[in-house]
Length: 339
Image (cartoon, rainbow, N blue to C red; front, side, top):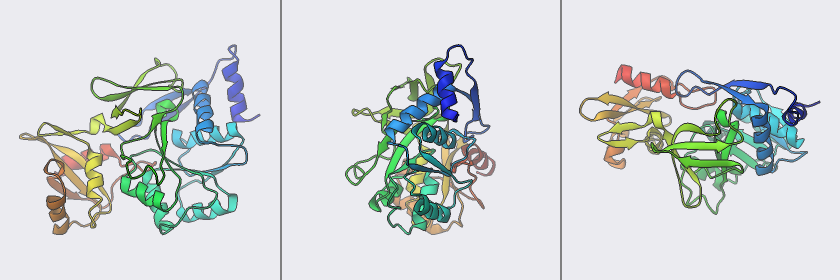
């Protein structure tokens, strides 16, 4: 009997105490948080995912995400419910992904933005494998420049938003040549069926869904700053805890990072705030590569004054979580210890 079949029987049998699974969040903001997910939650997520991602028997989902986090684990449940194959890679390797996409006729692939960037480089901006129908993006904000690069090359990009607490993604939006031009990189699409989103008084995203984790009320506060547009699309503007309040202006560090990455001499950069008596906080940029005056001049000439970093730090390597996201907790420590 498969995992999902056992899960389904336990969900449908009120006489059986339903066991749960315990996961940790990615730890981007510091110490990972423990989350308990019930089988009802996992089944609801798998059922919605199977429908929305058009996953069927005979399809193949290549899974190169960590299996101890929800992004990787959820793929297993979706595939089993659909009767699809899950092809498991223990780590991210662009060359192996290319080989196995051809060998096993992969139809679905899940990535975080840093993985997509490396994969496009490996394919030299060429088209994806012919069988690939969905590249599900999550874990971090997808830069528009990277999305444009992928869509123009024919990659079937689907942006999404979700949390460990919601058993994977709760919104999604498929990008193509018709909508990529007007797409805002904060836009993560409409909520999935059964998901209700509202914006709280502090601008935080509030979520109601049958996918919520065990032991909670049917609403959680995500900790993310967001907005909902007239089409019902959710726009994510970063973590509330990460916002930099400088001269009375609330600044999203991800927006500053993405503007800096448009500089031809910048490959990798992280941004955090450093406390300042006069301005409240100063924007500090942390670079992986040697920094020269050309970068600073570009910043002065190309970036709006309120988004310009006022201090610059160079480190040997930016620290990331296992899912490829910048470790914001580490970044803030670096900025406050050095700046």
